[in-house]
Image (tube, one colour):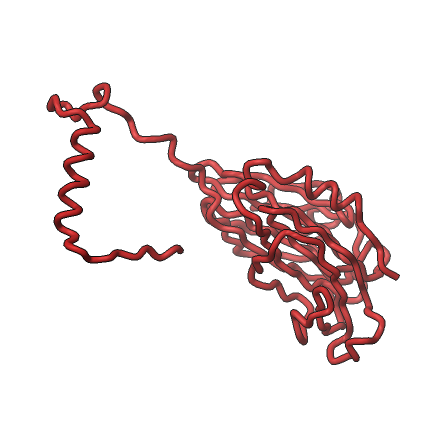
Length: 265
């Protein structure tokens, strides 16, 4: 039966900064497969979008128009008209960066989780680490270089922190017991200006517990600006506006009818 997630939709809309909403009519979506022992086909608005999608896979970001989307997940190669294993309507607001995840709840039942990713600016020299507990497992602690980063995280919970960019030894341990290591990433690199999102997925008792990683780069704090110097001139008595005009005229002459195209990165 289809479930409308109006509360999550409202949270997604409130969580996206107004400046981000104004920048684009599209949104960005990443899909994470966190249900073990199940290879699936993912349908978006009845169109097969991801085929033979395997456990532990994190897709590249997909740019989609802001809209409502019906997400249907079926076992791989199942009849497209058959009842899906999971189904949900998801609203993607303009400018949002979201993750749609098929994962297990605390009791081991499959579900669809929708996350809004933090794409706010990160100070120079720092990166961001986000951890999401989406596995059939008890509450956990997350340690970075043996120091507690997030404590007592329950299924469905997340934590985020900006940290100095660098390499980290990240461990997932039983809550309150640093010696009971559940999973470990010995060398997790947090680049400058990047939100590295770690998902705890699978079933701890079933032996399929593992970590999946998603990265969102390009979140550097923009430069504060170029100093204006001596009140609008170059220290030579030539006003900046006049210098700019002369430079523009020179470039026009040099161009001589050559058309320059700019590639967007």
